Image (cartoon, rainbow, N blue to C red; front, top):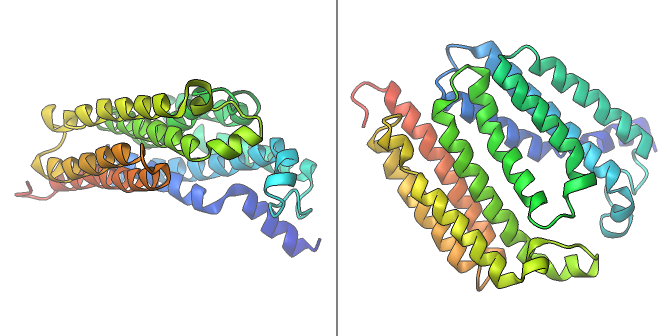
Length: 284
C-alpha cells in the first residue's frame, strides 16, 4: 500500500460522516445552552474533542472487529490491508490522547462526561456489543450525551438535559428497530441481539413504549419555560413523525427506522428554533 492509500485508510477508520454528525450535535447542545457567543473557545474545543473522540472510537471498533470484517466488510481499511491492526490501534490511541487534551480545557462537568464517554467507546465493541439491549443502550447514551457535552462545555446543562433524554430514548428505539431489521443476518453470525433474545414483536413493543415516554416528555422545555410556543410548533410534528415510524416498524422495520431518523432530526431542529426564538425580539 502507498502512503496515500494508508492515509485514506486511516481517514476511513474515523467514519468522517459520523464524526461530522456527532460534532454538529455537540454544537447544538452548546447553542441550546446559549453558549455559542458567550464561550466560543469552549464550544470549539468541545466540538473538536467530540469529533476526535468519535474518530478514535470508530478506529478502535474496527480494530476489535477486524476478524469479523474480513468476512462481512472486506473492503474496510484493515481487511483490505490499507492499515495494519497495529497501525489502527496506535492511530486510535493518538486520537484518544488528542480528545483528552481538548477535553481537559473544559469545565469539570464536561471533563466528567468526556471521561465516561471515552471509556464507553473503548468498552463498547469488546464488552457490550453482543449483550442484548445493553449495547443498544450504550449507543443511545453516547448519541444523547453529545448534546449534554456541548451544554456542559459552556456551563449550562439545564436546557440540554431534556434534549439528552429525548435523543437517547429515540436512539434506543431506533437501535432496537434496526436490530429487528437485521435479525436474519445477526442469527447467522451467532449474535444475541434483543429481538433474538425476547422475540421481534416484544422488542418492537418495548421500542414503541420507550418512544411514547420520550414523546410525553417532549413538552417539558415549554412547560418549564426554557422555550416558547415556537418550540412546540416544531416538536409536536416531530413527535407525530416518530410515533408513526414506531407503528410502521411493526410492518416494515426498514422504513420505520428510516422515518424515525427524520423525526429525530426534526426534534433537534425544534430545540434550535426554540433557542433562536428567545434571542429574537418579539419572537414566539
